[in-house]
Length: 317
Image (cartoon, helix red, strand yellow):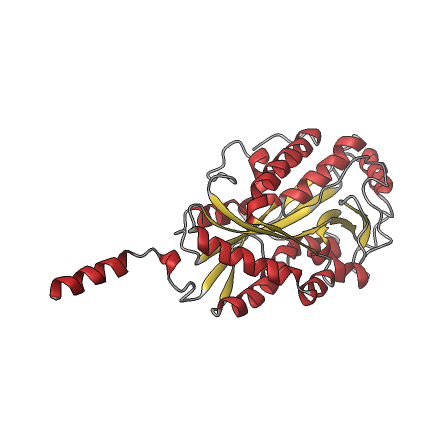
């Protein structure tokens, strides 16, 4: 009898974590940007709703800086048990592979894609006290005094979009790296920085309050929340459509049923009217894409962002 009992216990202990009642403890959602960024807003909104569906708290952990590389590496090396998730996106999975010669994570091999979540454009903002009322004004001033103007780069999207202006306009604007988007915004408002590209979620309040002036948006269509702000295509950059995206990921080799459970939960959340309204209010478009379609989407985005990096003349670090 004792042998039978021991054998039964061994069988139970050998059952993989995926077959148990996941989750049995809080889940950590790592965000590679600082509090207040569009990705952070998205993550906290998702965490609240995901926690309700899973029956366990989903805790957001911000790990900003280093072009989001340290945060991505941290998740890529975490145990693939579903208790460490990642809010990745265009910076970590589309742009970084083209911006850095050596990257200690592979966006396709080191993660389990769960779902794309939302998309958004990026807005070029300047101080309302500045002389700039259009990108043409920026280019004119940059030509008159090369290197004097500055732009804040808090993520890959802001860098690529600004470098595209420099390339097409044939001007020299000095890049200033920032750890977080709110820091770059604060310096534009204070007049310490000439301009920066911000996702709509981060820029919306400052634009509406008159703290900054919006000159253009990077996406192919105008934002419903900022209908008077023209697209980059409309102001002289034909074919330019730099749309930010974010998605939910886990480390590679996550049990398939855990990934499916999370993907299904995320899809239900993102398709709800309540979630769509909450995201629209901060300039994000709910755009869920299931795990089965993520591989093709991510490969296409890698190619697209790679072409933008090359066309902008950016040399990998």
